[in-house]
Image (cartoon, rainbow, N blue to C red; front, side, top):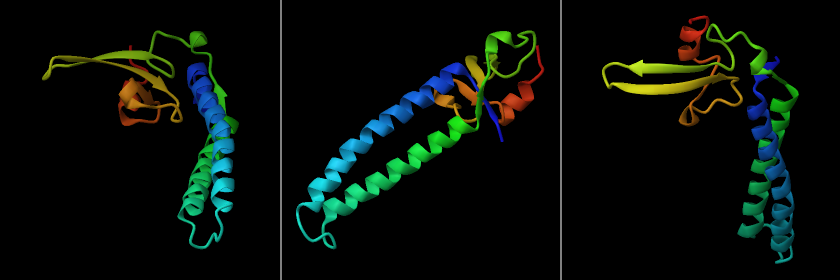
Length: 131
């Protein structure tokens, strides 16, 4: 299923993928170094490096999947009269008298700590189409 993603979100994923790919060489060196120390069956360094390699390869595969199933949406071409994908919304919580600013993005780039909520989130669903 194709998922919408902003240009910024796509670029962030590409940067993370590049970082992970660069880490491959470092981990390969760690594995080679640990392997040179002898018997692998009781070599904790080797097993730790292999576990790191497996985790890294999972991250790389996940990001490659995200890239292959995402469509970059130009948010400047979207109607900004109503809340939708790419919209920045300002919410005010009356009890705490606190303002919140969120941007509605695709699920792959959502990060509430950065004010990015998924278009699939309940909050976004409540806001979609509102003015």
